[in-house]
Image 1: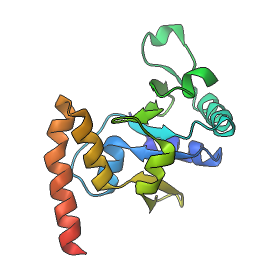
Image 2: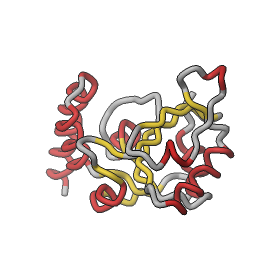
Image 3: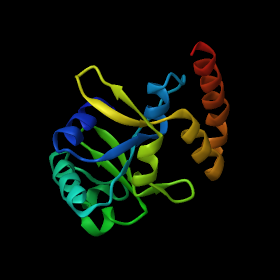
Image 4: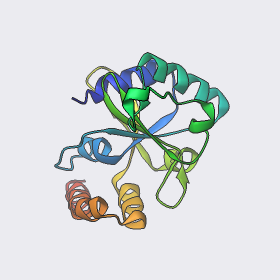
Length: 161
């Protein structure tokens, strides 16, 4: 079962620079739906990678593919633009170097809202317009299912503002 707040708390305690993206980010913006993993895009700055590795050790993170082998991420995995699909003691965590057509943390951070969580943390959450842009760029099956919900929620949010 996914306990995203516990994962976010560990990342924040280790001062990891990241942007929350994907299903949890959409739900925090009011999009109706559920998700089974937590998706982040991390800064690939070497000091941040060190903090992220420390957080991942605390989370007992291993790669989801062949979990019986208990493969753990290392710095070279996390500095790439690729996707690291991990399993932690609090549930699945996807640590992404880039999303869409190569959007990295340093670009995405400019398209975030700061959202407070119940535990007192404030995190950077990708805003709905940029989430829509990324989904349109990728246009996979799941993305095409989510796009109408994202657009409708953005319309409702704009109407209420």
